[in-house]
Image (cartoon, rainbow, N blue to C red; front, side):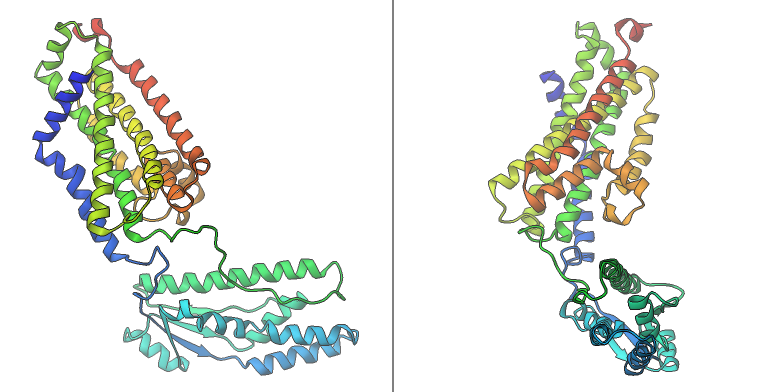
Length: 425
């Protein structure tokens, strides 16, 4: 099979189109996507400029006062009343929202200005604003009623954006939704905990915060898209090898190989080995060039690169399995249509489901499950987990899934690939 490996490598090196697809195209996309979303994936939001108008129709002091008056009318005990009064002031939803908006990390990307409704709507039409955040009348009172007494329907924040939409507006909307969800979640915890004893010491829920789960830096856009493009374009090696097998069958080179006494399955194994070696070389070159050109992995340790090499070796074997399966189909049906469908459609589907273009966490649960069982999706997850924790235990699950995929692909290729008698019949 070593002779097959040498032959396939020489054939690939002579094909400039194939080299462009496998090496230059992913580098080009890494540069475009990396610069376009530079810093966002790593938490650097200073490159964003989101202009938002705050339309404040509520009176916070009046709302808190009205809520306190309602408490006094309920006839609560003197011991509990001061604590609930204090909690009402501390948990004022508008004060919590203001604290989030004025936070340094949030303020780096969002510029807020107070406006009345009419002026804000006109500024939005003139595209001077990305969105309008409206705090409706009674927001403080109704929110406190729902949060602390479980009465009424609560209130809501209103976000207005242009019909055409904007990714900046979507970012702002997601940030506000995250704040609301965290506030509701913390309030639910507070309510459940207080059911055990209303006289217990009242503690203010802490909304938001940062918890460090890794000592390593967040994944940058160049790191993310280097991995995403690498695991996407490495799949094209499988279809390329199958297309070369179709050419060899069409030009009777495959028949001459069999006439030389070479077992048919040795030819199939040679294609799998060639695809695996070429895929590993492709990944090595892409990671190396990305480190040199974009500084994506500059300064990493030997341990880091050993883990990356392990994952690359496993995903390269997956590519070898696809090459074997596609080659078996090409030889058996004497057509490269399946290889073209794989390159033109299946790879794209795998790439979207596997997270090559945007994080899998943003996708529905069914798509995430499917993506985790694609070879590129499992490899992508393994790369990211290794980059964040550098622990071999955390990458066992995605690597195990890749081994299952390799086994299925090789068994299917052996079943489909014709034996010597079938080839000549």
